[in-house]
Image 1: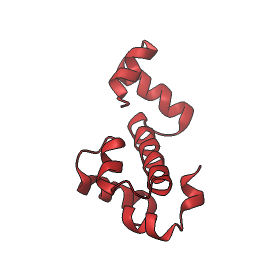
Image 2: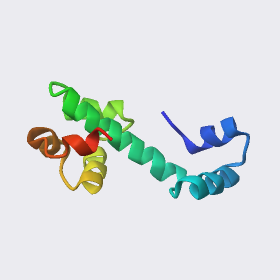
Image 3: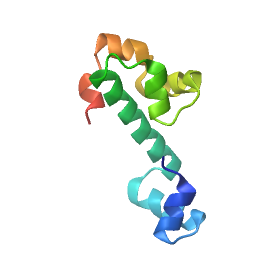
Image 4: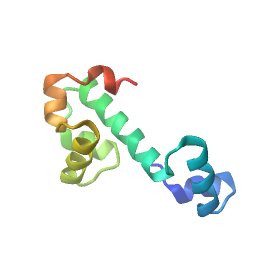
Length: 96
């Protein structure tokens, strides 16, 4: 599990300095980058492991609350995790 405080500590920087540096290099706040990476992982798991329940995919990606996971997933991909898996319409997008 990624955490901004841990990343800052590993980098030997304060949280604020790490966040500013990270944002200037990537164009994203560290927390937003982490969230995007978790969503990419979720999309890959949904496609590659069709027998894995959505609730387990959520947990594997750091979302103990399935409802929150579904909300964030829908905000990211404009489709529910179940529909994403069933339609496969975003399969190429998830593999990035």
